[in-house]
Length: 493
Image (cartoon, rainbow, N blue to C red; front, side, top):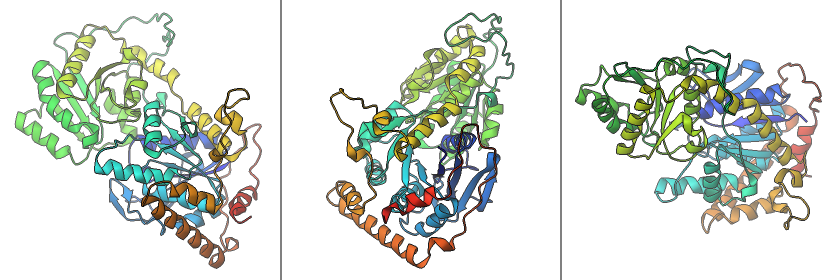
C-alpha cells in the first residue's frame, strides 16, 4: 500500500555529502515504488521556498536561522505551525527524520507524534559517551527516540552505538546500509564484458599493465576537512608518505575549518607541487576527481558507514582506510588496506597499498562490477518500505519483529507506540531525573500548541496540494484521500 512520506533533515542538497545523497536516492526510489515523498529542510543560499527535483520530488526549504555546519538553531516549538501546515497540505502519514544532530529532525518527530503520525528515524553517525558534547548529544537523541516508532542504522556498529546511546530495544532498530549508483562511478577504462562475479568465477580479461617503479601513483582524498574526518591525521601523514615513496602525488578535495592547517603544512614542507588542493566540489564532480587517482585514502576517526569509499572502489581505486566504526563492514578485504587511526600505522598501510599496486597484486579493474552487485538503492528502498509497513500495521508485529509461536517470548506491546498523551509522558519521564521532567514539559506544551492551532487555524482552511502526476506501478493501488486525515485525527478519537 502506498504511503505519503516526509523526509526531514537539516542536511540536503545543494550541500554535498553522504547523508544528502542517501535522502535523495531513497526518496527517488520510493517514488518509483508508488509512494509520495517530500523533503523538508532549511533554506540554503539561493534555495528558498518550494522546489521540484527529478522524478517529481518536492522539497520545502523552510527559512530558519543556521548556526553551525548547516544545522538550524533549535527552537523546539516555532517550527510547529509551518510543519503542521506542510503535513496537512501534503496529507503526510509517515515522518522520517535523518541525523541525530539535526534540529529539524528532532523537532519534526516530536510534532509528528503530537499530530498522531507514525515516525521513523535514521541514524548516520557515531558518538562517544565521555566528553561533554557526546553527553549532550546522547541526551538529545534519547529525547528524539523515546517516542519514535522505529529506528534505522546504516551499519551494525551504528546500531550498537544508537541502542546504547538512546537505551532502545534492539528489535526496534533495523540495519539498512547505504548504497551507490555504480553506473555513475565507472572507471575510465571500463569494459563490462567478461566481468568477474563476487563468487570468484574466472575473468577472461587480461591483467592491466602493472605500475612501474618510476610511474606516478596518485592518492585521492575527498572529505570534509573537519577533525572527526581525520584531517589532523592526514596533515601529519602526508609529508612522511611523500618522503618514503617517490613519484607519489595527492589530490585533496573538500572544505572545512581544517583547510587552513592543511595549507600551512604544504607551505611549511614546500609540497605544493606534490599536493593539489581542489576545495569544495559538487557530488556530480566526485567521479571525475576519483578516476584521476589509483588509491583512495580515508583517514576518518569515526564513521558509521562511509559511502565515499564505496564510490572510490566503484571507480577502480584501491582503498586505504582506518579501522573505525562501521567501515570494516563496507567492503571486502581484497579492496582495502586497513590502518589504526594513528599516524605511524596510516603511513605504513599507505606504503603497503602502493607496493601492492606496483607489484600488480590487486586487480582494481574488477572492483566496479563487484561493487555493482553488492549495493543497490532499490534494495535499500524495499527494506525501508518494509519498515513503513511494520510501523503502520500493514504487516503484523510478529512478522515485522520476527516473533513466531514457541520461541519463548512474546511481542512487547510497547513496541507499538501509543499516541495517548499519558503514555507518551510515561516514556519521556524515564529519560532522567531532571531531563525527564523537562521532556514531559516540552511534550505538554507541544500538545497545547497543537490544540490551539487546530482551534484557531482549522484544517479546512488549508488547501490540499496536488500530487505530482505519475503512472501508478502495476499492482499498486491509489492512495485514498481520507486515509491520512483519519490517522491524523486518531489522537482525538
